[in-house]
Length: 262
Ligand SMILES: Nc1ncnc2c1ncn2[C@@H]1O[C@H](COP(=O)(O)OP(=O)(O)OP(=O)(O)O)[C@@H](O)[C@H]1O
Ligand SMILES: [Mg+2]
Image 1 (spheres, helix red, strand yellow):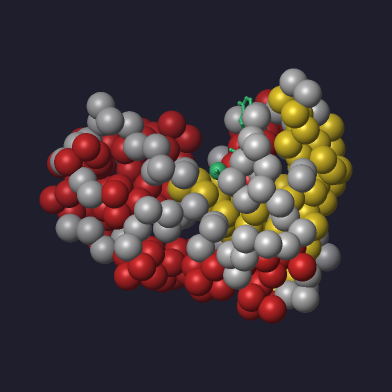
Image 2 (cartoon, helix red, strand yellow):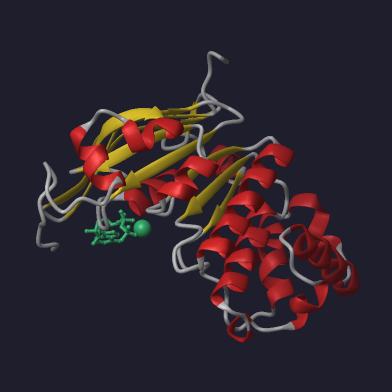
């Protein structure tokens, strides 16, 4: 195991008004491994990823990528560190006004990575077609608008956009939510394949325990702003932790009560 985790988080806190969402998160993700985060709806899983991505500024704590604190780095270094991340957003978050191909190439263009900004339109389309094939879609899909795709196809395009540019780090926010079980397994297979093929480090958020065990090496559960359990993803269904057990087995009764969200 390498001494330096790819991602190292210490004491991360974030509140919105009086609502504390992250309350001292410590997390190490070793290079080349996949870390799964589970937790109830509204527990702060997406906020955690958004903090690492720099889309939300935390109140305190450190976020290190390759040993460098993203929060105190110079703007140029911060961009360089965050540019390593490819993200599959919850709900895919494709740009409706752009074609599928332009969506896929957007990240590459924005980052100027792979000299994509110098590609001709035809070259860009061809490159997008290659990436579409990697996620099991026909290159002709590139000419369509996101609104012309099924939910499962949109997830695949979101995945294509995330892996375009072969990022060192991949974030997946509920990659299988809303998909049929077979499509979910297909997407998981694609994720595992991408992580293995690219040798990337991944963080995946999921409510889907089958998916968590397929995708993850390590796992943790977020509850009331803290990671209340960390272990192997393969232990999720028999962790010996009452909260994790209740969550992963979907039991109504247990230490986690029904709470009104605000
Ligand atoms: N920009 C924001 N401004 C104010 N509150 C926010 C903001 N983003 C998130 N929150 C709040 O933070 C809490 C955690 O939200 P988050 O989206 O991280 O939940 P989640 O664990 O991803 O839930 P789900 O499983 O439903 O996606 C919620 O109560 C949400 O209302
Ligand atoms: Mg979320």
